[in-house]
Image 1 (cartoon, rainbow, N blue to C red):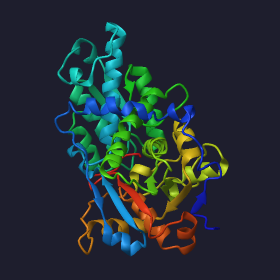
Image 2 (tube, rainbow, N blue to C red):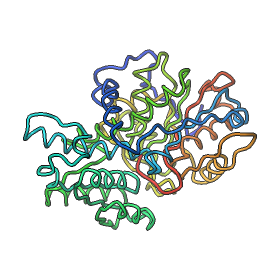
Image 3 (cartoon, helix red, strand yellow):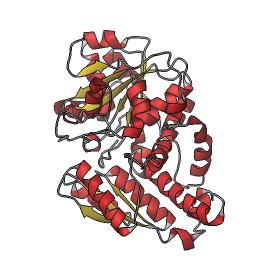
Image 4 (cartoon, helix red, strand yellow):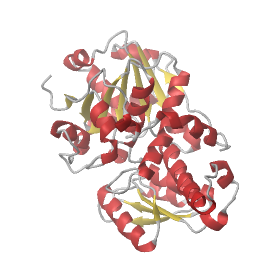
Length: 385
């Protein structure tokens, strides 16, 4: 194919084993312990995996399933899994440093070790949902929280973060500028950063965030024993994509085909694929898909997404509203699914591919295909994916 909106990954090999380099990013063996920890949370339960047979028939594929993260924790987005877990692990490690043992998250939720945990102030940069998640985690464990928001973040998203007890600092700039300001002010004030993107010397916490996201993928495998043949997953910095690709790559034989979907103005993964290394987006990341408005990838995710994704593609701004409408107003018995602009991006990518015969043939989509997409958020707002 010669389309400029979709490209094969020349590094991806279908027979490539999930190796040590990938396990350093997403370790599938840690998920049972994580599920045990989440069982202590009274509002946690698996989110639904909806089957859409009528939409599958319309698109010319065998099965379509949508993992609906709009119902996660009553929070409205998959981000709830990552930030809450990462805050808990930061506090658990602080207790371990003093007491010599790693406490369980349930123990911390009950208020144990407040002499250690109450001293913490957590900070992060976010366009919405990740900030809400970190704020919720800080509140759950009794710590203070400061969230840095880029200029495009809506007043509704700011209000949702403040409602969880966090202080908010608005930045006159984009997401990357918010990340930079968060790093500088946190260093000056002794705050602990809970970021979903990595940089030199800062990788453990982003790993914790992504480890939280693997919960939704394990739920998919339990809910759908046959599993997918194709996965369309949206990407901002790459945390969700790494969790989905890494966990399914490690657990499924044969592994599905992975298609990474981005806004055309925030195509840092498409450009990184072309360069063969992390590279900047070709645009300014000005997009209604605020959770995907990222100009550069999280470097830690490259061994999984950069080597494991089969295809990288973009969607246009005008392809998002019709995709949201298709999910919200289904026909012939399919369930209605409320999605935000970032939440429906993977599905919008599927719709774009299915409208292009050359792309359908290249991705080997057809009547025997079982396709998974993730509604990463409901209508409330965005969060960098």
